[in-house]
Image 1 (cartoon, rainbow, N blue to C red):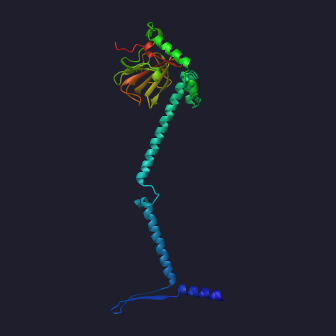
Image 2: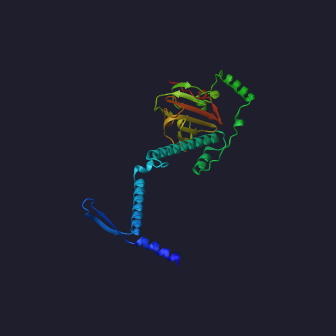
Image 3: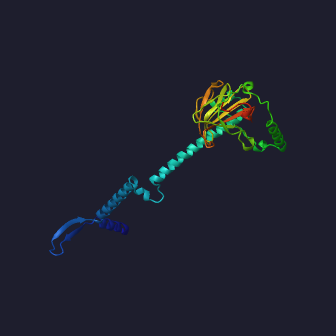
Length: 289
């Protein structure tokens, strides 16, 4: 009985009406007069609180005020994240292209795969992964001595094979700025020419690589009659695509100054025999006539 009486007393207090009268202090004239209950006051204050909270949420969600909330990224920060993400994606793509180029070049030059098989493997995205033991690539002391002896003998060789005996034409003619130097890992010859000079194939063959690389710009590689491969780097434009057949003397590219390794308008030309780089000047005359 006591609990029910208390409950009724509490409910009665909530709904009991009260009169609020506002009068003029000087004239005692009644200005405002309305009745209310405690329940009305609670409902009004609760509704007002919900309304204010809703307005605050809308303002924060739809206006720049949200950037002042700790931990919420600003529009400028979002733009910077997007830009960095785009640049990272581009760099990742360049690294993939470079790794693919090096893998394909190594496969062909080591004779592990024929150019025709490489084209089919690339088309089906099934190029085998090549794991190279870097320790095995280091030349022994005997190998170094033999190389030095051969290089010394080559300096005095007078019966250098002519262009006709090998059928090699000059890709272009110009001034040689840097020659073949395996000790400095320079496996070709740099010929200085004007930009946009036509680059020609030294012999008939099949294009096994024709694409852009970060270090060497636009590169084209041709597989000639076994075991010869020719490489043309730092081009401004490539005129032949991978898989195309080219004839000796046919224009395959336009020279330029492209790639991070380029120091000026020139063609970096390499000649490989059975997977080993050879001195192009022993087989081709690059001098201007």
